[in-house]
Length: 453
Image 1: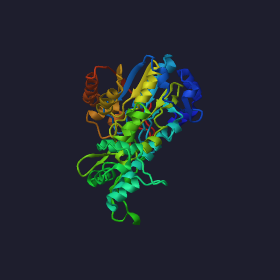
Image 2: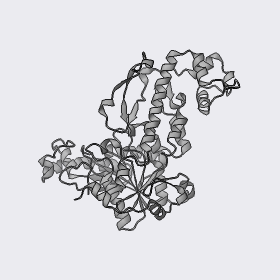
Image 3: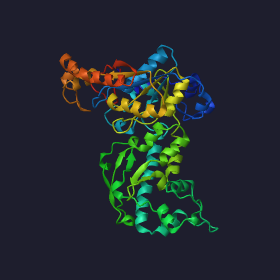
Image 4: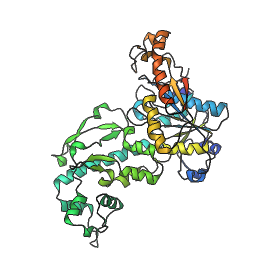
């Protein structure tokens, strides 16, 4: 069996314009990123709004081992079977892999073997820069938050107000649109900065953040464990303002969650403004809008909102958008990508991350509630390896050889683990959808780049 990279590099790729044309996407509805990937403009939804939706299928899994159970492999495999073998019009709609596990030893939600999205290198790394945009937007917010806390400690109300609303060359002041939103939130119905009373100026300019309530840390898209807890503010100009902070992985950012759940650029702007970063000393929420960064965050994300069009090894189309990890985020591909796909294809195969008790339930409870979309069927991925572990088998550790219980036949362990599969099926049936169990046959030893069929 060749390695994943050998399989991917041996594949003959279709030009992305051909993939798009076969779906009915016009060239002027694309933004090309080289010959084999493109972003799809949101305006396509206006053209397709009266077209009937295709069938919606969610792929999930039983409780996974630390090695993953091949949900993406199965997702891509189903799409290739429907599209390349049966001639159906199908789109795979999945999440963009994080760089974190890609450079580790676990599969990165990218598929494997002969069920991959290609070009593999682009898919697993930068793609079109969506995760980088989230990193930049998130850390901009973190920088603005820390700077605001520092300046409020150092300046009185009048200096803060003058810094926010400086006089122009003609001696005039003006509020930005973001400032007007904050004034409305405060119940101040004035549009001329000069009309604010001293009390209103103070209320407007001073966020009065309770530092103990700050929830907005920094992010980076790699497993850099030494940055998980850090001390910031150690420079000479920040003396006296040192405090603990840390880095989370980028795909766990609330900005990623907004990207996955938004329905338009305007909706995304509104959601960014509502992101809570801390509370003030009166116990009221302090938002990105209050910080004045929601517009800048939106500008940084203006291209990331567009789904990425790629292809599978067998040339069927794939939308790649938003991020993974339903155990630390909601781990779903975007509503926008799914809605566009449903207008273009007869079958849309999407995936909800992690196990069905986390990813699938977040898919139904969060994503489906926002989108209004209901899948016709749930595919429940299971492996004998995972069932044996849930039946009491030895601990599975990424990077270490599997115990003989997993490489040799052991029907007793398998039978003991079946209740895990049964419970997940029961949970899915409670949502009123059909369930199909897909057994993903794994190789005898774990591989560094994921699983294969």
